[in-house]
Image 1 (spheres, rainbow over the protein chains, first blue to last red):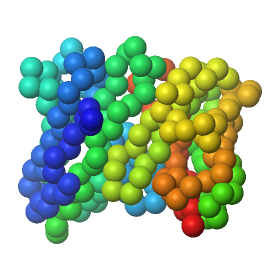
Image 2: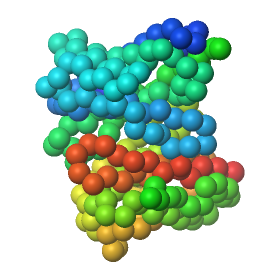
Image 3: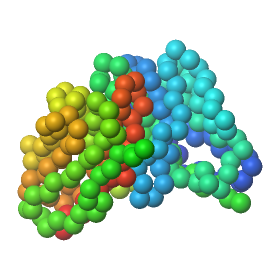
Length: 113
Length: 112
């Protein structure tokens, strides 16, 4: 039973436009959410995070939105750049779980020039 | 500043062989995690150390999997009598406190 789901395996966006990646979770104990970016043959790289006490966190071109009632979060990238092309993983943790992360299956983003 | 390093980067084993995968965390990071990533999927938690103490090993798929971190720094993940279903990328991550984990490049294990 997947506790974190990314329902879109891939997304293609034109350079300069907005990329929106979505993530749903089922475990109400999750209180911290993260987005990681992964290039081929490299480990995941931390991108941005959000605590459950907030509904938005922004860092440059990246913004994460959290809707706790819907158990849904999204990552907005604007403007999208070709270098953003990678696999994006949503992850969640609950403080009583030693900060182990539960990951979604990933969404491959392709930004076309 | 060195990040998390893992060795070997690639490992090919014959079914039934034992393998040992090494993780060098970022200096000073007390938390260390191992994850398994199958092809086309997200990483899945295997086990967690705080310093030398293994606090959670609930994700280890079988008793063929064993992890240690004897001095609270370098960690080794050992897989005995490897099976084809063990083929995956094994990721190590370390952290100081809070929830941000820094990942190594992973070891790609292929069991023939």
